[in-house]
Image 1: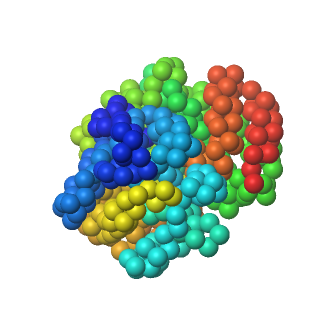
Image 2: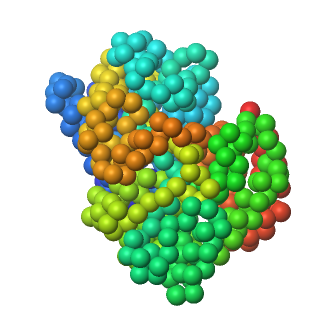
Amino acid sequence: MLSACSGSQSSSGGEGEKKGEGKLEIFSWWTGAGEEDGLKALIKLFEEKHPDVPIENAAVAGGAGTNAKAVLASRMQGDDPPATFQVHGGAELNEGWVAAGKMEPLNDLYKQEGWNDKFPQDLIDMVSKDGNIYSVPVNIHRGNVLWYNKKVFEENGVKPPATFEEFFEVAEQLKEKGITPLALGDKEPWTATHLFETVLLGKLGAEDYTKLWKGELPLDDARVVDAVETFKKMLGYINEDHSSRNWQDASQLVADGKAAMNVMGDWAKGYFVNDLKLKVNEDFGYITTPGTEGQFMVITDTFGLPKGVENSEDVKKFLSVLGSVEGQDAFNPLKGSIPARIDADVSKYDQYGKDTIEDFKEAKLAASLAHGSAAPEGFVTKVNQAINIFVTQKDAKQFVDTLKSASSELK
């Protein structure tokens, strides 16, 4: 979820800083506009509250954490964990680091901070395993958002599409006028997976979508096949240079009016507002992706306490700030996300934020596959590879067969 790297890309420094000794090292992939601003605001707040604790922003660039996760895996396996690190709630946390015995439970911290009724129970469940809580959610991102250029839509007399039928009608009208209907930047394959999972959600609904990743619904179900065919049809309306662009580049096409729509998580809003200085509901608009009204593809960034760090009390101080109302309201308005807490100050958020906070209270939640929350890493990797091939070859049967064979990775 980021662009170019800024800030430190360092890891542990010398031998004396092994296992988190010395500076409080905050490891993330937040280096792009919006997310970097949010992280800096969070660190500034921590430094105001704990000026005696030296802190290091150890962010590593790479879309959706691609590079950071590789660096983290190497360090964790080498018994050199950062003080705390960004990890998506769900399978990425629980089937990855918790199952590997690399994380300390945080039940006592939740009790101490009075958090058990301040985060939605569904969210606490995403950061829990076998009765223990292992990380603190700092935000909620929505994945199933279709962003569109207001001027392009108004000038061409089209309305934001709520259904797949409407999407293809709008896409065809725009294509006939020489406008790229849908921007995609799949230089990194997770972005195409992100688009595909929103189609699955639109075809199956949150409950059956979730069953796919639990092995309770076959991956060659008729509705999955329908979703694959719909995804294939959508790919007929994307920009030709999609494979050389990242997600920001695709968002830029929409901002510039060179493309009309883009399906991306709401970190794109942080990019539109912070980096491109666009205005919500003036320059760009938003709607849930086709067929997903009342559904919420949830991605939550969280931080926990790795086993073996020697400054664990300082880590808990950081987690306390991160989980506080003040911390969440410092971070999320800049990041483009909404607070994970239910008691945050709604007035600090723009109209998109306010709308999303309301939707989150009522919508049916579905964990993101593309961002590691819905299924184990091995399965997600195979899906990314299969989608990468599918975007080029568009062989629906081969793609469905690959999904089905990859399901052996599901637990």
